[in-house]
Amino acid sequence: MDSKKYNNTKLGLSISKGILTFILLFILVSTNLSRELVSIWSNYSSNNYILFLLFVFSIGMIFSIIFSPLNYYSDFYLEHKYNLSNQTFIKWIWEGLKALLVSLVIGTPILIFLFYTLNKYENLWWLPFAILLFIVSVVLARIVPTLILPLFYKIIPIENEELKLRINKLAENAGVKVENIYSFDMSKNTKKANAAFTGLGKSKRIILGDTLLNNFSLDEIETVIAHELGHYKKKHILKNIIIGTISSFLTLFLIALLYDNSLSYFNFIKRTLIAAFPLLTIWAMIIGLIQLPLSNMLSRKFEYEADNYSISVTKKPQVFADALNKLNKQNLGDENPHPFVEWYFYSHPSVPKRIKKMEMSL
View 1: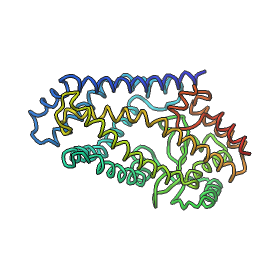
View 2: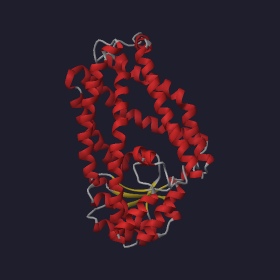
View 3: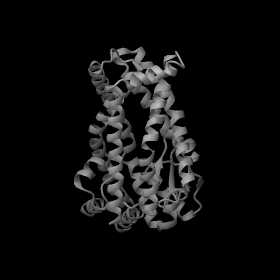
View 4: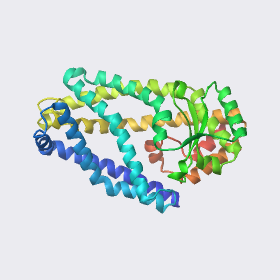
């Protein structure tokens, strides 16, 4: 099946990129390459903060060049091979450059603060950095719908009055006050479909891809939006913030502990050495790999709860099942992933499992 081949290939490429990243970072810290790179940049600046940024950005550039064939194959070639992409090569490059620019604008101050905490707070550097990450996550949740998403898509209020009426009724039942209901031109990049309830506070809004609006019935869209609102009604957003914050503090504490205890093994005399930064990244990757299946288990639990909410408020279980199947087919999702792959990598349960779970709850 095309969906099986597509998903297995994408997963294989993702794993390959992760392994290659780990190997390259390990080579940097286990040889003199990391130190030599710092030495090269020290000829251009004596300011440690500028030197740190030059070091990180140069590694990022080198990695981007090394990974460019894999990224092209995964994100452009495969999407066209399986008739999922509407992008030209130039458009794909342009969207990637925009994403890179946004990442630099957001990521650079975070990197500077990380280096500051490493130098200022010694053994407790992870604590203020965890606090910063929490603040950044809340700010991003508020500004992504209004400031960042419009950089990539044209976002307009939906015009279908009946659909607006249905969605507003669902939002009212869920206790959500939304600023408006929007569509975005997802079709300019892909044939895949999606919808989301996004934002915090006054930036809360419901957004629907035009690929969803153009290919799904009103009943199907209603059940999909009910699912998204179910996440709010079941307090999944609040729970994710709380759990994510606790997890972030624990994760950074463990990373700091492992980082400090492994510095001498790679002949680094102190944690603030710029050349040691790849080692910090290695430990972050390892902890992330341990954390991933736990995070996905919780996410799948929330998805089941949102599914049940959708059918409880719309009273249309068969319509929702049809919508899930149609979404899965349009997005070329794997209906029957390997159990380990689903357990470890999937944030959403496979569609047959979701439908079976819904049938059991009726």
